[in-house]
Picture 1 (cartoon, helix red, strand yellow):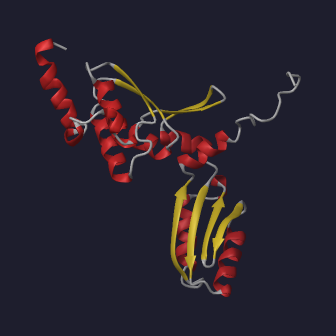
Picture 2 (cartoon, helix red, strand yellow):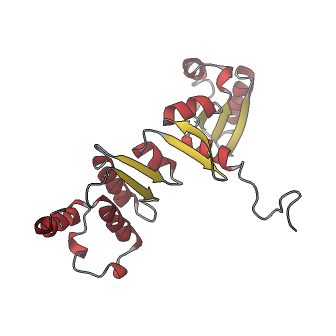
Length: 220
């Protein structure tokens, strides 16, 4: 950066990352979220072609997190951004390609939709009934009789969450069957979704070996 332009550049960056009200304060007095903003601004100084970001929105409230994501997204033009995070929402908001690493090795790499289509275990169906015992049992019987690979994940009174295998049926067929029987089972609300990126991440994370267990044939 040209030395004569540094002051204007710094002021522009401070405004861009939303630190105007903290500009004259010591960085040691900043909150965790404000320090994250400052770190992002420092990373963008000099308009680098490659930017590495580690948990950029960690510790931020939802509103600040969304603003941070918007800022990162707007700064991606003509540069590569490599981001590490445990937030799958952050991945889906910012990343065109996602890799999941376990024990130092990449186990998958691709777009969010590609990972869902390859590693997704099926569909998730959330059903909200009247809460009456008869309605609850009718929904359970309906699921078991219409889908071969069905699992009840959660149940809280009349709210139930099922998972069915993707090979079991099509998304359109799921909606058709539920709509045809919705009134008879007194279903008030329902939703159908693919396996989330968060669930896929957890599946891979379970492959992480227990650090407390000694390795076989290793030192005791």
